[in-house]
Amino acid sequence: MEHIAIIMDGNGRWAESRGLTRSDGHKAGADNISRIADAAREFGIKYLTLYAFSTENWKRPPAEVAFLMKLVSEITEGRLPDMMKNNVRLRTIGRTEDLPLPARKSLLKCIKETENNTGLTINIALSYGGRAEIVDAVNKIISEKGPGAKIDEKEFAKYLYAPDIPDPDLLIRTSGELRLSNFMLWELSYSEIYVTETHWPDFDKAEFQKALDSFGKRKRRFGGVVSETK
Ligand code: FPP
Image (cartoon, rainbow, N blue to C red; front, side, top):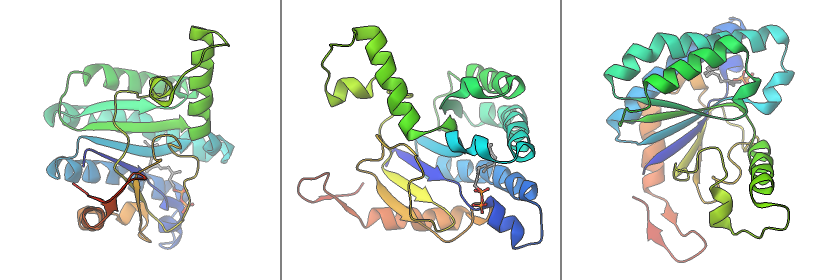
């Protein structure tokens, strides 16, 4: 088990059920990222990919988008000392060039400063869409190789946003929806899926452990014959 991807859903519903604002929900969701990252380090996970903002999320009300972008800057700047202390590396996937300048600057600084850290890699998906990633890869291939080139799956995967990161072993989705929502369409082909009703701000270490226990019982076949999970 090297790589876990998480769709951090339900901040809004978590807030609503407590009579709080959606922003309060996002704040609580953002705070939960460090708790889950600590648990991931304890569990010995190498890569944690978090779906923070999709290509479709730009359609949300401007004030909510602005709040989320401010959170991106706050978390990346605020958590940098902890990331250094804990040997955590930050990366991103997505069309991050679409983010407002302050968010981009904070991210770049954090990515640069943590690039030699060798512990957990936190990979944040921002302005990310699975279809956009595939289209971006196709365009890169055409511009590099010319329109007549023939490629195979292995070669194609080299043009994705993070070609060196192995595909997720497990996808966790909080808050109960049974869909992929345009997340890592290529990379999740053979990942195990775990969905919990728990909203993201309440998804804690014990819930995380439950997801890992469930994964441990799966038999992964990758289209072939049975192999035990590890
Ligand atoms: C889903 O809740 C969550 C998001 C849209 C974004 C996830 C964001 C965070 C965890 C906090 C911010 C962190 C960063 C790095 C931006 P929702 O609003 O879709 O909840 P709902 O479905 O209940 O309305």
